[in-house]
Length: 264
Image 1: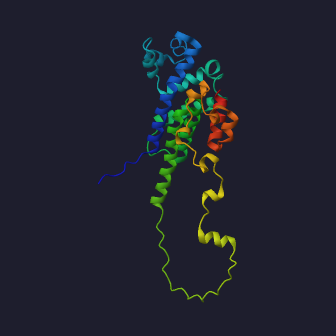
Image 2: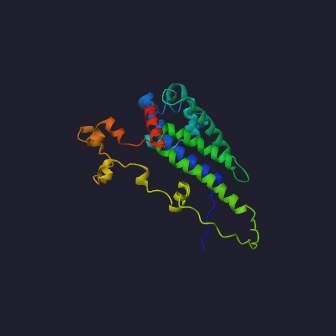
Image 3: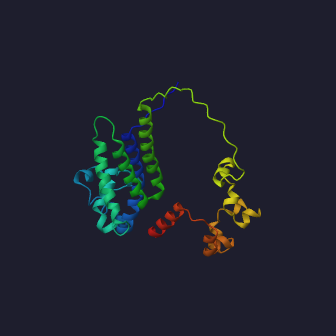
């Protein structure tokens, strides 16, 4: 019978650092290329790395391969040292704090000895990774966020496994209750609702007319952005007032819109 493999917090942080490395490489290359053009490697990278790193890094080569030579520590140091002239105009000030914190996380992780990393420290490290990735490569942030949730879930399971077993009290004979008196037919509304359960959702909210009349088409749920750009989309997607009049703005959608505007 196969046994479940336990993933340590140290391993989860290592996974998170690899995700951050994979996200930062293309981002840093793009920003350095915008600043230094064809000299992004010689002037953008080699001029600011340490002497030892400069000796270990290639002088020329294919751009993708050169980026892959930069480990997570080198990438974070590059962001820190190039912050004033390259990254400050692109990112909020908090992002630099995340970079510096992750440098400390990487060093502690690389030199960690004995035992596992605590739940609080692991969650804090992965949360910082997520916050940085939300600023530079939002698509990668979901992966580190999932690792952070796994830290909490793992700690909860460990607590449940080690919790002392409490024996239930022994059952004793309960006294016989007297017969209930007949009640009147005018029972409270709350009791009536409890007897019959929750009301159907159609009695609680009013669906859109297209849904209520059966005219809703699943194919129209997702807009064809090419039609929107060409001005041929349905009115509810072409006109912003009509779109938002038919769309319920959840908290997640509101956060997404705010984040998109901030990035623009």
